[in-house]
Image 1 (cartoon, rainbow, N blue to C red):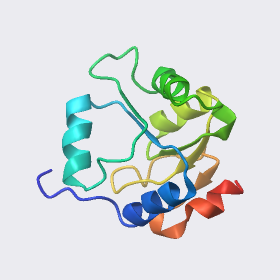
Image 2 (cartoon, helix red, strand yellow):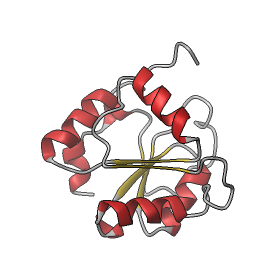
Image 3 (cartoon, rainbow, N blue to C red):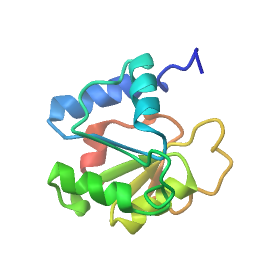
Image 4 (cartoon, rainbow, N blue to C red):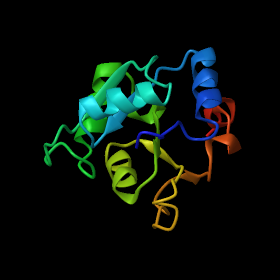
Length: 136
């Protein structure tokens, strides 16, 4: 984990979101400390309007939609205007149960899992731009 870096294309993608003025948030089953540490290490710690973490509470964790619902509430947006980016079936289920459209972008560990419940799938953030998703 000491060599963990951001995924290919993510910095460009986040910069594009920021240029468009679109709010962004993090929803994670991990702890807040883990998210803070690794988002800093990967160079993507800034710019998030909300960060919602399960922090070891299985009742809050995905596939329960609670974290997504909480993030939507804190951001003050309608779920129909939100796009979640997920890399696992559990995350996709949580997003869909919260009424959110979902884009699957698998990682090396989840690429072979069934991500078919997502509305779209890209193998990398290099394959899509925020502008393309505004039409989604």
